[in-house]
Image 1 (spheres, rainbow, N blue to C red):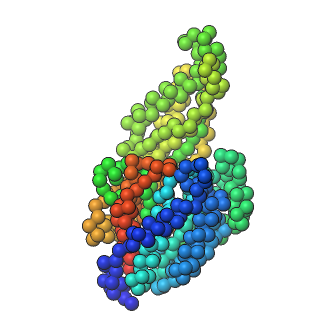
Image 2: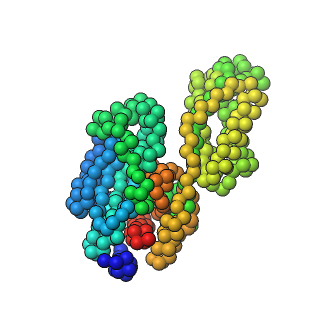
Image 3: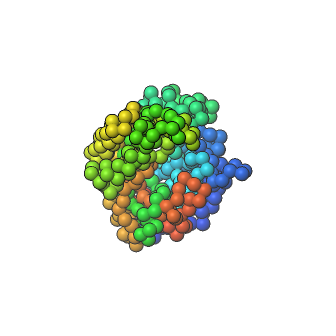
Length: 421
């Protein structure tokens, strides 16, 4: 069958929303714990492996070639056509007490695209691969599955990464029959993947607030994470005059007050700086805090801006510490560069959205996704559908089914477009 025939035959194709919804319900039943809200499928947990086994069975039922690599990436390959595969998918692991749609929608929609093509007897000119990446949600601080596929794993991190409970990632993997020592075998060659497409919920409020069903992502923000320690003097809160205190918490508050000034001076509309976790010592009502340890997370879609924010943040911390007589220690824990989405994939998403009559907006992604690492391997693109209330990583996570239908159909037609390109 020629590419022209495929294009004509597939022009009016549409996914089966009821079937997609049923598959989402099946996925959402795995990782439920009595008395615990939401879905609980942390990376390399029993529930995570159970949902992978479930999806592997679904892939086999379609006649796909199914395999799992050393780090747990699950692949279902529809062996049609010739040359490198168009890959689509996302992840199935969740944060604790996570939502129904995060990651799972991208996997289920990719499977539904394959079913739709098979049902219509439309054969693409190249293989189609559905990928379920491993450990995307960062239980151990990274996105191991997509990092391994792209050859971007730091072996030192792999050996030392632990979760909040102190479990080593390599131990969690080994307990599930995986082979962390063989992580390099998961790496794909660039000429083996034609493109990577991902459908995801927005996890933010923009699309819903604007009444737009589709977000086409132009780039994914980079992110840096610091652990900052301000050290003062713990003392009696009733007997120490205000002007003689070395209050670590007041230093933290003064720095936090300056964050908007940092963004105004060197940032952009896409800049995000967040203090997300704070630990005060001794953390007693009648004692001046002698130490404040807090996380500082910075994001932007432009590398130069990220570097400017980091430099300005460091300078402001040094100024605050000096002015208040506090000690300062900064542990630069991680840095991930921003990644643009491939311009040809963005153009394909736009082209197909216009053909389908779908409203869309171009936008950045402030959150990390598998696309961020897949962009190091191949042409990669990401689309969003609205999150109701902007809520994600919570049991209340919700996306309207008409928006899901729109996103899945856009994924389908872009898959065909890219396969034919």
